Length: 362
Image (tube, rainbow, N blue to C red):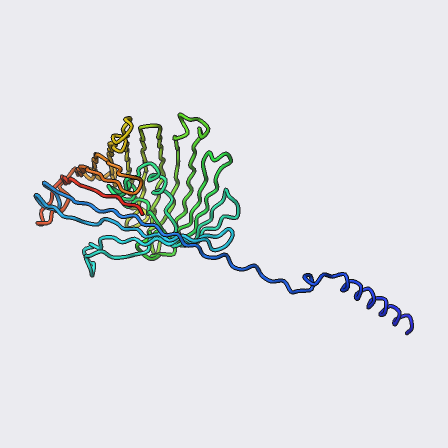
């Protein structure tokens, strides 16, 4: 008993000495770090135009003022490695079964972005699509015409899912992986399948002044359209872009395979889009002008025949400043057959339009 009392007394003395050596701050309970203050940043992009059509689907001598798109974006940090973005899309709701043919609002992006380290970004929610942003990094005139892969509905510009992008050492490119619903941002999930995408982008000459503007990219998109059974929806293709001094050129090419009704009803098609911008080499006021051109060829089914659509765009750009661009452009859409429906109910193979576009960022 005496030995037990001695041990207890010794332990008590040692504990008292440890407490005596503890500073007042160390005796206080740990206080969690305060949450990072939200610091939202707002921006917007507006596409508006005046269009005149001497002939085509709008009818002879048709003309109108219109809004094509208005995007409102809010970005804010959530925590040390977390960010959030939401972007709304104001668009012309002109579907045949639409309840309202005026301007409507829908969600384009709504995502959390986690960057555990500088070379890795993981996004979850309504995320940017795997292809459109890359092409638009060269074709900067969505306000004139959306990219060909978007225009023909081959790869959605946004979709619900998760993506991860790893930047390669030396910033010579990146590797991106996606798991997506596959229905795009304008429709809910329609089946039990998911779309899987891998994209590799390289800027192999990032250290060269003459070649650092060269970008090479390849994409493999494996998807499904079916509900009860899987219906193939696959795309594979590439992009090459180059910019230097007064010139920019780019081209996207996709091979497409779709099974519209049953697994055996495979349709193979292709899309080629080539575009360029020639900037003024003259200093001063003339430096604000440039010429743009684009040529698209879309063939949905190589075994059908007569379904090729060719689109030609050329225009003159005036960049008043970084926020306001004006574009006067001509657009011609030509189909092999008279498959474009005119407002009077007839069909034509040629649609001709002249535009005055305004692209405004603020």
